[in-house]
Image 1 (spheres, one colour):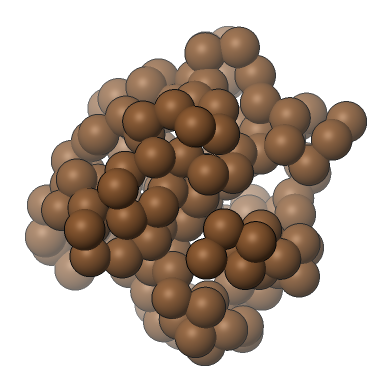
Image 2: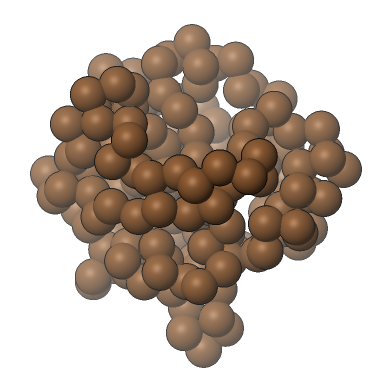
Length: 160
């Protein structure tokens, strides 16, 4: 598996990122297109809040959040959990970023990461530039795998 492996149906590097509008844990509706011309975005799809690998992944990002901010990228973690569940998850782990709820699975479908038989998304990363184009995509072979922040930050730096 390469670090740029994507599944069929998932956007690839060079593709325009599918737009979406999702509810955030702070109560705002967040549209991916609202970042165009403003800042780069790292979409971090994860299966379910409070599960072991997902908790480790989000807490790792939280511990190194300043590095993501310093690299000039907005991190948008996305899961199929409800806004209420994600708020509790954020609070319990004192995470410094807002989560997006894909409760209706629309973004997961648009990005080709919905695992229909489980009804949640696979773990995946999409780095979207200021013009709305995917510059790096990584869809894990299965949801138990995750990238280390070092690798993700290397990709962010490579497409600065």
